[in-house]
Length: 575
Image (cartoon, rainbow, N blue to C red; front, side):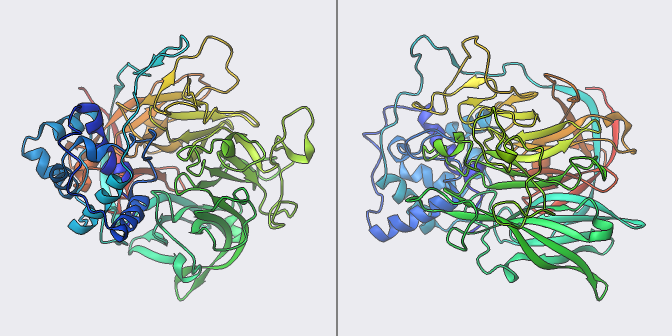
C-alpha cells in the first residue's frame, strides 16, 4: 500500500481534535473492534501510513495519537478519513479549523471502509490519555510561535509550462513518487533524468519519459514502503560522466535483506536498509540502460522514517580540487527520535543524523568499496576532536534531504523539521547542527514532549544556527532546491530557490555569505492565471520537489501525480 497518509495529515488532522475539544471521553470510545486479527492488521496499516510522523504517546511531526478515539466519535473519524473534502464542504466546524491550522486539505485516498475500521481499532486498542501539553518548568520560556513574522512576497512571478507527466506507479496518491530531477552534460547534448521512489528511473526527452532502470528487477528485496522517503529516492552522476559513464543511486530494502556495513545496535531490529550502488550507463538499441551494480555502502535503519536522502557531488569542484569526485550522502535519524532513541543520533561514532562524504574511487572505507577523504574531520584518527566516524562530514541533522552549492564553494543542506521549524543550514566541515537537542535556534528537552521548544538561555550555543528558519504556520517540510546560476531567468540569478513540500509554495532567498537570510515567496502562473501547486495537481497535498537541468534551469515537480513543469519565465509583478 502506498505510504502517504502520515504527513498528509491522515492522523495529524484527526489528532488536532485533541487541541480543539475536551470533555468528550465519556461519550466517545465505543464501537471499535476488539478482534486481535483486526488490531494486528490495523497496526500494519498504521505503520505504513502514519508511523513516519506520529507516535501514540509523544508528539512528533504530528500530535500524539493515543487519545484520538476518546476525543471524537467513531462516525466522525470514519467520515473524515474517507472523504475530508466532503466533510469540509458540509461546513463541519472542526474540518474548517483543521484547514485553517494546516493550510491544506487531506486528499481522499480510497482506503476501504474495513481498512479504516482496522486502523481505528488499533488506535483504540492502544488508547491512552494525553499529558498536559503546555508547561513552563525551571524558569524556561516555552516558545509557541518561533517565527512570528509572516513571509513576504518577492514581487516575482514564475510562469510554468507542463513539460512531462511521469507514468503512474500506484493506483493511490501519490501516483508517481518523483523525488529528484537532475541533468547531466553528455558530449554535445544535455540529458535530463528523474527517479520515482516506487523504483523507476526515467530519461526525459521529446518522446516523453523513457525507462532506464526498474529497481525491483535487480534487487528482489527492494521496498518502497512504509514511510514517505522509502524506495528509490536519489541518484547522482559522476563529475567525469562523459568519460566514465558512472551513475550512483540509493534505494531501500527490507531490514533483513543483507549483511549491512552499519548496523543498528545489538538487540535492536532493523526496519529498513539503504544501499548506495555504482552503475555504468550504456546504450542498447537506441535506449539507455544501467549495468552493474557495484554496492558501495549499506546502512540499517531502526525505524521507517528519515532514511538515506540525497546523493550529490559538488558541481563546482574541478579535477585537482580536494572535493572533486567525492560523493556526499545525507543520512537521516532513521526515526530514532520518534522511538526515544536519540542516543543513536547524538553518538558521533554512529552513522545516523549525519552528512557523509566518501570517495567512490577508494577502498579504505568500511566495506572496502569506497574510500575515506583525507579532509573529513574524523579521518585518520584526527586528534583534538571527539571520536567520530571517518565517513562523517558534519552532524546533527534530522532529515538532511537536499544539498546545494554556491559557485564560491559554500554548501547548503535543507533539513526537514520536526514539530516547529524548517531549516536551511550552511555546512562547515565537522560542525554540529544540533538535532535532536535543538530545532532551529531553540532547545528541546528530550525528557519532555518534543513538540515543546524553549528559548536559549543566552549562553553561547555549541551548534551552528541555520541560515534560514521558517516555522510551520508557513510551510511544513522544506523542499530543498539550488542556487540559480542559469541564464534564462536573470531575476533569480544567485538566489536559492526552494519550497514547501506539503503546500507547494515556492520561495527565494539570498543565502550566499549570509548569517541569516530572508525567504520571500514567488507567485506561480500557468497560462497567465495565478494558481497554486495544490490546484495544479488537484489534490490537497502538493508534494513539491524542485530540480534543475544540466544548464541549471529549474523545474517544479509534484509527486502527487508525476507532473513536471518547466519554469519558462520569471517576471516582476505587482501585488
